[in-house]
Length: 494
Image 1 (cartoon, rainbow, N blue to C red):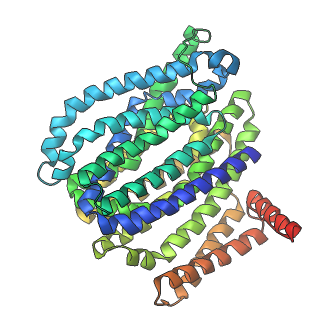
Image 2 (tube, helix red, strand yellow; image 1 turned 120 degrees about the vertical axis):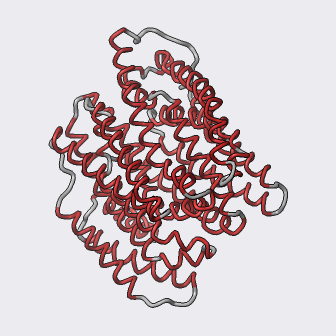
Image 3 (cartoon, rainbow, N blue to C red; image 1 turned 30 degrees about the horizontal axis):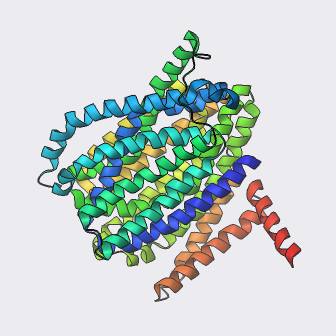
């Protein structure tokens, strides 16, 4: 777990530095500078390009994680694996290009009246799709060298810096909105370019093909993983992004903008979980390859504990400060209050399920992971069609929460049934109890009148009330060890 802890710390630092900049961008600047339609446009473009781009990878992201350990050989340029990666990216881009031109007229016609801004800028989908395909492939490939933190640095931190610069250029009149949206798309390409440069500099990217390991049996196995992988990977991004499309379809681009800003606050809970999952998935894959199921169980248990603790305290911090969050936003975002709550619950549920999905996905039961993801698509689709027309953007958030609740329960139950792994114990109930106590005490604090003072005091109370008993009862070995290490360094310096 030392490697996981180290990469998680680095990844979390980048994630939260990026989250702070993202907070400035999304919460403080964009709602004040851009209209809800303009915010809706940026989010809808990213959502649709993410969905299509994931499909354009043809499930090869799963192939990378599952099969690259067999190709790993720096002396022989990893036996032609980088060539396969680039070839898949090019073919996927060509297929998505054909799909784009086939669907463009329909998208324009559907949005010409209620979401004209999207119809005007639909052409930007194509470059965003290319960027998404090659980012996904290069990021997953880079993770296989146990360097997940760099992908987080360029995506979570650097990209938000570039976005902040773009917002500033728009605010000071250097760019009009047309210039800003083109700059915005170009900025999304920077992480992909930097990842590819890193891989080239480290000698892990070569266009030299090789048939050394591409036996008929190996190719057949890779195609099988890719087939099921394209469904499961596409499903994963589909369920996380499709709500923007549904909201634009049933409401309009303005509602999409309000929902996107509210969604951002709820999604803060999941940020450190991404860092943990990114590096843990590599360890899980290597453990399955060597037949070390005990290591998989160890990773599963520790990840579950750490992710639940982090998820609970972040949930309490977000919902405990909900009034302060809404004070930061213009009045038209008041309808996002319950969106923040239900999205936060949705992400807390995913944190509690931890790496159960990765265990299924990278084991011999990967086909079942695909079926579970298809089930999740059905849940997302059904709940949105049912709830969104009735309750608007709140209905979309409830749809997400219910879908991920069922999905997480199925994942955990499947891992318990097939592997006998149970990551939960009584100390997890203590985590929930301490979280509840922290929230109640923060709720009892009266409004202090000053936004910054109230935010600071309320957050401090939550952190102290939750963290002290968590460390005292040693609910997380990793966190307790980290705390002792920090204390030892402080007293050593003194």
